[in-house]
Length: 536
Image (tube, rainbow, N blue to C red; front, side, top):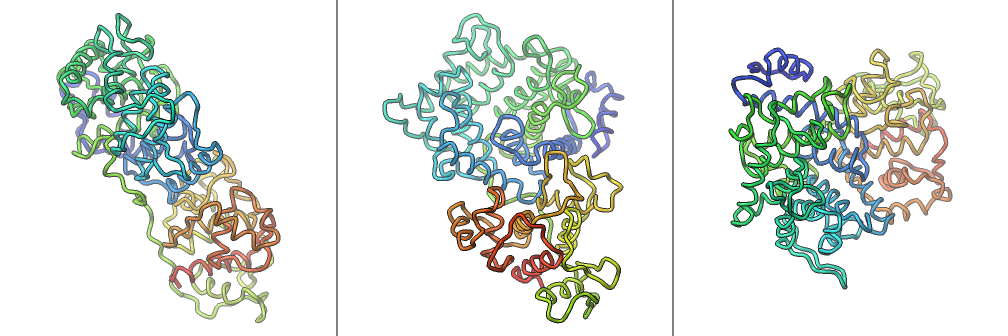
């Protein structure tokens, strides 16, 4: 039994092994150790899904786990995901899939976990398809299960079905789930009752969906039968298997099921040889916060890691007496955990200037203003090099200094070695959501930064400064249309560049989005940002 509070998951695992966790006399997991495991898992998932997209891996489940865990994420993490969802929804005309309606349910859950209303996303109601009973249930049990979980997550009203469809009700979905229960008490994906074999993943999901309806006698009986079935199916080490293979995801679904039902994880029915499902889940944990799919895997699996995070989160929320994982009425948009406080450096070198900065230079005031605070420096002590270009690493350093952000060596970039001078500033800028990589694992620190890249990063920094940076596509297009080269701004940069123009961070008659940004131009942009935010 682990007795001491440990933050490092690697050390936690070592203690678990040394203590013989699977056969411990007590089944409880100390809340402090559980909280540390959630924190480690969140950090891993946040790095693995640095920019989540619509999808079942590296997408909604990562967002849901991070949002419900309350663990720190980079500034703008959820906002960027939401903007990407809006773009995706617009591109597909609100049709996420014409057959798999669980696509809607999954996105609804992610948005709800962030405090967003899924009925208004880029002009589309993503709950609407779930009003079509026929289309929703054609996937098998997954359809009605996840429709209920999604609609109940924030008590959405039952949407009206499209013309010609069978109008669904919540009770119809409940009865569909009950109808599909197997003789053994569990469920699988395709069977409609009968003598089929129960699957713990699907059974756990069905229990999660029925949890809100256990006041109905028929539902209560079905839940009781299912719990008896799963108790009998639970392995001697506290785990579960699917398709004859013990795995972490099966355990997670049953953990979440018990938490949604309000049943303690150390309920006697689910303790085998002193080990709970939570104890078993931790045997799949990897140093660094990831989770393996099976015990034979040699490294972390992203799907298993995302499910591991929200399984641990469900357990911790239950231990702390909070709303369950899928009861999201407590989720509030805009409460991004871990956002740092901006602290612009004070003036320490008033009057500082540079030999290559003539009195008439257009950016002199900005350069000297930042130099007085130690935000910008010369390259040889007396020269600033206003017309020199700037690397991505140098840009990160300037912005981190300007905002007084805490430096940290972290992030998913293979080309940012821990010993490099820029590692702490790139880590800080990444953690705060100011910079992304040129790919999932590369930052390209020595790459020359362009004007549109700089504008996007300054726009992200503006959120930390308290500015409202939201801008829909129509508004951005209107702003950029005022420039003769506005049409050449890359799609991914249009909102950021339009914001900088509207805010007066970028000035001039042309944008030159793909041109290398000069040091004097970066200084002016950062100076305008700080001045416009009232921070100078």
